[in-house]
Amino acid sequence: MPKIFVDENFCQGCELCVEACPRHIVALDSEKLTQKGYHPAACIDDEKCTGCAACAMMCPACAITVER
Ligand code: SF4
Ligand code: SF4
Image (cartoon, rainbow, N blue to C red; front, top):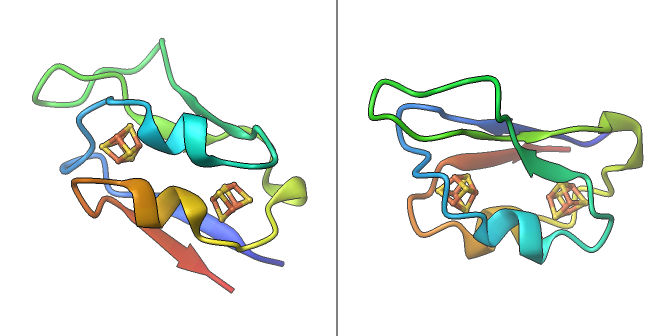
């Protein structure tokens, strides 16, 4: 099953990945803050991920890795 990993050291909370995901399963984690003070993105429903990598392609910080 495909899965995404967000490197929170690079995530800037810009939400471009949230907008890019066709399955609407990426969201910022409002309960978490990165060391740089951003809410990091995370997949909220791994089972719905198709591994399309739209989120990773949109990320300006190259923070997302897709594992297929
Ligand atoms: S790989 Fe595709 S389906 Fe999975 S979280 Fe990213 S944009 Fe959404
Ligand atoms: S696009 Fe990249 S930097 Fe922006 S919120 Fe998503 S993972 Fe973080």
